[in-house]
Image 1 (tube, rainbow, N blue to C red):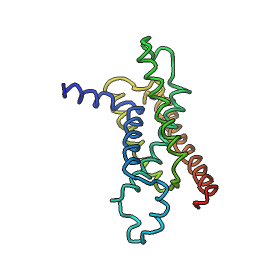
Image 2 (image 1 turned 120 degrees about the horizontal axis):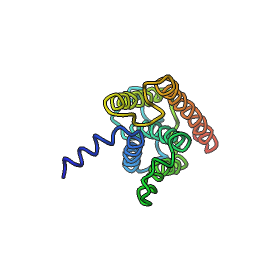
Image 3 (image 1 turned 180 degrees about the vertical axis):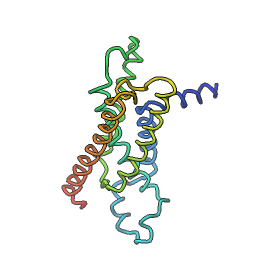
Length: 195
């Protein structure tokens, strides 16, 4: 029984959606650990400079994970509904097809709700972490594609379009979404009197 579960984790890790889904639920777990999310601004003001880069604070992990996951899920949703969503990908089983569609919209809806509630500021230095995690995923995608078959038809790593244009386009999309969400978060916090 447990070996089947382990095989599921290994075989499903090739899908960016799975990375996004598990990251979303982990981020929401971190959010539950932080009881008063609006007090993050007060916590930030109360610590001194020697604690600035101390990683052993749950709110910092939540802040980074939320930034990463929110932007990632927006990118996943855009990519799925604009490029990957094709009728031939569905199995014709109503429950499975509905779950596939929910898998590509429910996490971003949950994160949008959290974004509306929280007062986090997006920090451009955190984008480096997001870029690193996405690069690790691209390497996993490349390894799976070369050892088996392409995970996604649009990223085949063989053609100019599937090996250069689409992967670079995904990085550009990641940056643009991060930048736009960072600006929205800033203006939202200014409007609430938090900046």
